[in-house]
Every structure is written in C-alpha cells, then in structure tokens.
Image 1 (cartoon, rainbow, N blue to C red):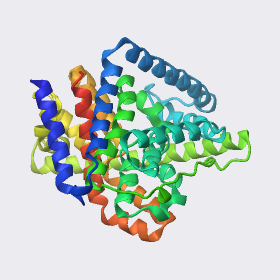
Image 2 (cartoon, rainbow, N blue to C red; image 1 turned 90 degrees about the horizontal axis):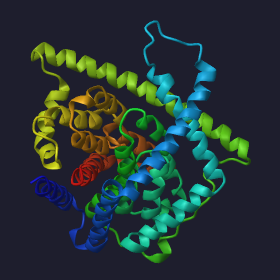
Image 3 (spheres, rainbow, N blue to C red; image 1 turned 180 degrees about the vertical axis):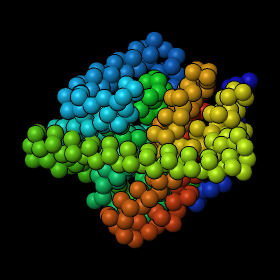
Image 4 (tube, helix red, strand yellow; image 1 turned 120 degrees about the horizontal axis):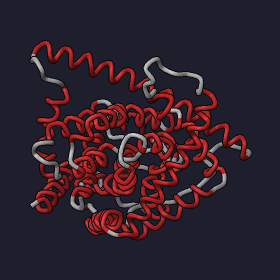
Length: 396
C-alpha cells in the first residue's frame, strides 16, 4: 500500500508541474523518464545493496573525519570558552566547521579537481537526458557550491539564457545544497539520508524545471566554459579565500537563525494568545498532512513532520533541521528519512531573494525576470523536494 501511495504522490507532483508548464508541447518526456529511472536506481542502490550501503558509510566516515579535523581548529581558537551549564554551543560546534569545509572546497577548485568532475559529470547527464549542457553543468555544480557561486560560474553563458533556461538554472540552484555546509547537516541528521538527498534533489530540480520550463537549444548557444572559480593565484591564497568565505557563510547562517527562530517564537506567542496550545508548526502540519501521508509518513506522525517541512519553506533548512533533531526520537526511521531528504535543499522563501540578487548582479534585466517568477520558482523547488523525499520513502 505504501508503494502505491508513493507512486500516487509522484504522479500528483508531476501533474502539478505539468499544469504549471509554460509550453507542454516542448516537454522532453524521454529525458524526464530517464531521470526518474536514475532516481529510482540511485535510491535502490544506496539503500538496498551492500555496495551502496558501503559507499554511504565510507563517504560518511570521510565527512566525520573531516569534521574531526575542523573541530581541532575550532577548539584551538575557542577551546577556552565554556558555558556555565556545559551546553553544546551550536555556533561553535556546528557552524564554524563550515570554515574548514569551505577551505577544502576552494582548494579542490583551485587544483582543477572539482571543475573537471563537474564538467564531465554534467556532460554525461546532458548526453543521457538530452538536456542542454549549461543546465546540466549548473545542476551538477549546484551540488558542490552554494546558490550564488553556482550561478556566477555560468555568468559567461547568461546572454544565451532565455526565460525558460533562466528558470531551470535558478531552480537547480534553489533545489541544491552547498558542499561547504554538508558537514553541519551531518552533525544534526542521519548521514545516509543527507547524502542520498544530494543527487536525488539534483535530478528532481531538473525534472520539475524541465516540465515547467521546457527548452530547445541550438548547439552554438550551448557551450560551457570551465574556469578556475576560486579566484586564487596560489594554493595558499585558495586556502585563505575559502576560509574567509566559510567564515562569512557561518556568520550569515547564524544571523538568519537568530532572526528566524526569534521571529518563530514571536509568531507562536501571538498564535497561542488567540488559540491556546496551538503553534504555527501545527497549523502548517495540517496543511502538509495530505501530501505527507502519500509520501509515506505514518498518519500518527504526519502533523509534526508536516510542520517541520513547512517550517523549512517559510524559514530555512537549518531551523527545520534543528526542530527535527529535537524530536527525531519520536519518529519512525522511515519518517526521519523522508523528512531529512525533504529538508536537504535551499527551497525556501529567502532563497528567492538570494537567487534574484545574484542574477541581478550578473544581468539586471534577467534579475528582474527571476524576481517576477520567484513564487513559481519556490513552488517548483518544493515539488522537487517532495519528489525526492517520496523516492526515498519508497525504499524505506
């Protein structure tokens, strides 16, 4: 029964995207079918085979070792700081690890290792699915870099992007996560679900965006230039740039968490003043309950789980992950997996401004266009998160 409900959820997601489509006659059904199969095979391989489980465990161990190294750096600088009750300080123990991961990412970029992987993996996806190279490259690039960085990497191709192509690259940026903050995610939620969510969300973003904004591209307008995006002239400059960028990201995330969590408590105080014992999360949970049940979440858990998923959309993934971490023990393993996959992306209201602002800096006219379809972008990215989470739920 669970598989039937999951397949129904996938059909509903695809149907909503079809209704939103700008040009249904140009939808690449073959490419979409290939990507759906790729999602099924990826999830099956990672969850259901010994080799897949071994790969996830190996990647998880690598990240855990890197987190240990990063913690040594944090401890050297802040080891003398302690709270009176010995509480775990989220900023010190989670967010500052981003600095080390950002440094590694910058060095791998300077050494041409990441750009080469991204170029050929993007080219493979383009060849298999029939999608344009720029869109495929951007989707893979978005798995490693943040929203702004991924879009800046293709700025030389922006003059080739019409409205539909602009939607697809923006959707890939919103449906992704940055490798520099995965270490922070792994300290809050189960590694296997976070790691599986990364490729699933890449495919989901392309699937939904290709339905909503189908494209046909001439070969002369579909060329990808891969250059050193680190902006560094030496190995040590790359390290320095990565560290500074990571520090900025950590401070930005910390600032957003302070604002969003404080605002959430303010809203809950106001809601409870009107409806005693009711929270914003519970209200959102009832809204998400129908699709949550179809995704595979148990009826007894769907209100709390739906509230966390909705919270991610109106705030950000960190706020929602902290909520999930606090009550994870009350959920079944399947619900934890589904919700974790859903949360592992940048699909939220604040991302509209980040993406529009980045594009505005590259091309003012295209920046205005992104702002005009911002809500459609968020709906599409949310559909992508639902698709990924449902795919995971089929094998849990």
